[in-house]
Image (tube, rainbow, N blue to C red):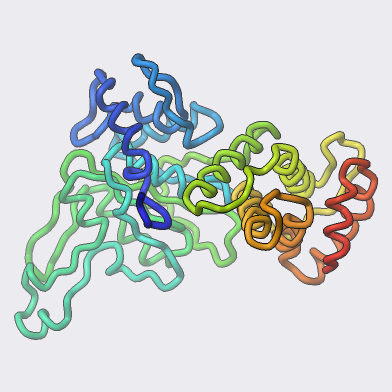
Length: 360
């Protein structure tokens, strides 16, 4: 059994990818592991001809995944855009795993990301000793992807400074990366493309230049449409967490997941599910990813500080921590929701009391 805390998608779902490859008799673009249709099956799940069941990685509109995959067969790069917690990085990883068999060619965008993280860098000890030589060059994930015909991933593109973002323009338009110090260039081979992610709630977002925008096809990943869809996402991801972490706890009751998702959806939308009561909205996004985190944290509490059965008492701290990001504004929002909504629900008394007892 692997002791790795979080395996890459191509390793974790190796059996599914192998089965898809065996059954895949459709045209594959150059250097693609699977055909576009098989990639979409891998993402959305389904039953193969031999009865093998492929688990869904993205639970949502299948057409969005078809658009994303189709984009990567063209000369346009793909930008996955949306609110935090809408599975942008998750989808990006699984797309790269299914197309290239390698999801690890990744650049993490931050305010401090420099141009050398995208183009190339230098081993300065060798540079001083030998001057600019191929041996002194340090390849970036983008350069390696270009050489090998694979997918490169750039996380949080809009957190990177605009001047650094524009280093991508030549790569995406000319499909080449000049290395003037060596009087040469790296030309991308077929199969190369870039998947970038960006969220629209970041503070200090650096807007993409119009020149760069034109080189991306944008797919907006929405929050889950329905309650049942979101519950299913949380349930599947929590099951995966339990399996990896080997928690000495019972699987969470569906009712507890439903209550967490209900709280998050109501606060996110500003109205209760029945549409009768308006509620104030907190400053945070209360995404599906945060709902998953709350349940995972509750399971850990139940496993190590409870009887192994997830209860409202185990979930309360995680709920409050997710909702109350601003200690002044969100505290008012949460307390009002607690007293006007949760208190009035007969079968929610346990979660009301657990949250009230903790206070904020």
